[in-house]
Image (cartoon, rainbow, N blue to C red; front, side, top):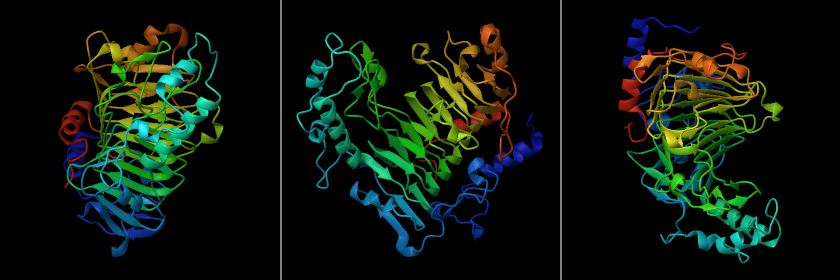
Length: 427
């Protein structure tokens, strides 16, 4: 059990409202405190990303490695492994040519691909199984064209911050096999897939708003992640399955480790936070240590998070679900997962019982405590086990919470999250 005296909680709550984190260090090098967002670092003890040397991003960047970007091509400044700071100065749409001309899905298509031709070729009325052949190859080539345009590959020792209230639309922020990255104060919206593929049963989409893959020491803070003007629930069905346009909101996969996600707002998405991407990915054992705290999670249909193998500390978050027709669960207990959930708040629409918050995907337990549901404290695990007597989960897990700031009572955290989470909140 993790407990904190109320006086410490109140004092810490006041301290957390400041914009300047406490000093920390990375790889043994002290980093001074700064009022400049680009040179701020993750506070000592603030989640898993503060462990093993901490996370400083590009705080030590030389003046020549500080960049201001306002176009899609300028966003390439995030590449490379030398310390760097990238300030995003205005809204940027990934699907825009250098001359400002919008790029439509049809502009990425090659080798005769069109959706009408694809649907005609792989209609289950005359085609069995996964799509293959020249038209599927054309879809993949077209998708590769889109990937080249919309994916931003972030280098090591990088800080990316939005200046004011700014937005990246249509991008997928790819933090892949690097160490020491900070992303703050940005809205990342509508990572739209022009070319979903048919696998014989469902439509497979690409492009997450943010993906952390094979990376360590990553701090994601005061972000807003959403699907923009594209609502998957409103998309048509093809072959009897929803033709979705989005994959994940924020995935942490492929042996990533030491990640803190804080003070962010995530809105209106289906497959939202996937941490660990395969029941057979045993190389993830001992890794995928992620902290999720003080986030506002609104109308996330599922995976908030779904965890395999990892050690997830989930505390002081606010979950709001307004439509029971588009809600499956929040905490997915996967194979060898260790979810420690503390003092979270749920506001569930009528018709959604507390037992629905948890879903078992082959796990053994979840350590849950201090959860408030619709204005009262509820043991969500007891509710789940009562509703599922044949497949009950234990109240213990093998992992640990890791470093963390003092945990507030859920009602106190809810008020601060509603005031302060999301992009555009930092000056």
